[in-house]
Image (tube, rainbow, N blue to C red; front, side, top):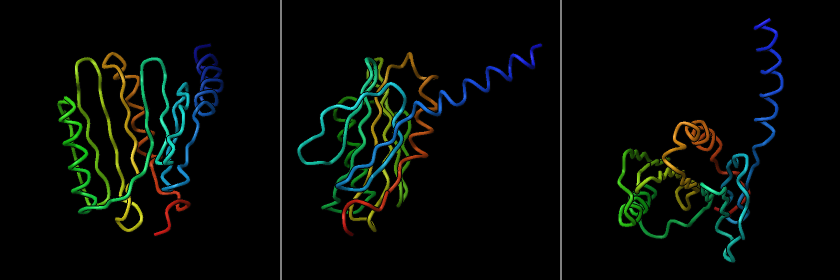
Length: 159
């Protein structure tokens, strides 16, 4: 009986979870990523750099930007410093020539950022996710999926 019940739950739960995720592609820079269930889009900025999504307790931004000064790694370091200047105490940071990730805590809030080098280093794409520390375990698989889905669509900025 338990096996039958487990199969029924698995059959119904998996498609529902998979179907609820959305997807966003930034037309200007070509960065793309999945959007978690329940995250409603906000108003698009006039410059077309990206889009914000929100729930009552969490915020997600997916965006792209030109790298004007320096390279990808120095740009990521600058963005990290801006987050530190905003009061985020980092608990994790890693930077490579092709991607960077960092996470921090401010009060009861958690910030996770992932950036990827695009367009032969001329631009980068990123997402920033901010959520409540109380939701940490629930957001671990969300972060994993966002990291796995963040990529260059090839449809944006002409390199």
